[in-house]
Image 1 (tube, helix red, strand yellow):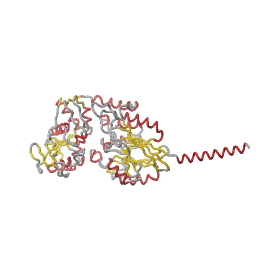
Image 2 (tube, rainbow, N blue to C red):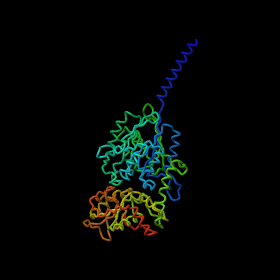
Image 3 (tube, one colour):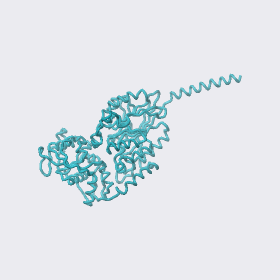
Image 4 (cartoon, rainbow, N blue to C red):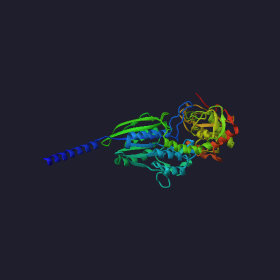
Length: 504
């Protein structure tokens, strides 16, 4: 009798285990993707307006990541879609080392290279890749000498019970939006064609295919339509704040905006190898989010090394110096006037032009420090003097206003000239009048032009500068020339002078 009971027990145990096993096989699996993009080295919280509480910052993102990892366990993947290593003094002075150390601490699983991650040059880029304890992806950035990618093309990673494939893609516009010298010897291939090849290779091996892209929302839509094997696109570059995922076919596109103001949260549910449910949102990095103690300690260490140099006062302004992104990319501002005046005077040129995208912040009325100037001009651009014909100059001005009223990093702030244009006309025919030194532009005359070495090398699509004769390569950083001006002048109060006039 006892033997029979034992057998019954064993049979029931086997049935129970089989049912449990079957239930586990059929149970839904989850994947939580936490993501950032275009943080531009905002390691610390910042005030979006003078009277606002500080928001954003990677030291607060780190706190949210810890909390969400605790809630979701082994199912979490943390990704960054590029433009992480450049954009603030604490990054620029140390060529991104400070940012990589923070990202290592937060334990990112992967990032893709953004165009501004090339800003320190290829040697610094290689050093940052070496220091990162996470993979740096760049499938379509190819070394011409070897034909190999500059980073890792794709990553296969187990996450919980799932296997995830991640492809990294960088905008082909990179040679135009970083200094051309930073990508010498590199070719940026078509990201869609590269993604097609890699996604078809990964799809049979993994449960989820993710494209980690720095292409912009419009290009991400095209990618989703062209490569249906991709389940999720974690994007960046266009600074688009998507409150919930955008769906193209069966692909979900997410992006958080900019400057670590939000942490992206996307949860996928899979059954039988298929995505059956998706929910996504942005988690605001508000003033109520606590600083992560360890991340704050790392940032504090780097911050202490900046204080002595950047805290030095060099002058003052009695008015706001307007460097707001939306303004310097669409119209004349007093800060744009001031910077180009300094450039023109520094090299003794007929006129000066500077791309609005190179001006990254405003300066409030009051004392001005070197740190303020570095924030306004974070790029390592140097002063250059070239000679070019009036015909090429006109082509440059047409290029400047071709996208108006759309924001355009290539929109030129100017000195020594007055420009009138009609945005109702077709691009390429919008400039109606140009005066230089009080005289009408002469298409056949040679003019001397002060600019930065980015524009002089054809950056932002200014190919007409490539044929200009370089008269002077000063080697002086533009921001240092601006700092020297403040030291000489003391207090200033520049006004908008009407150099760029839009015909309504």
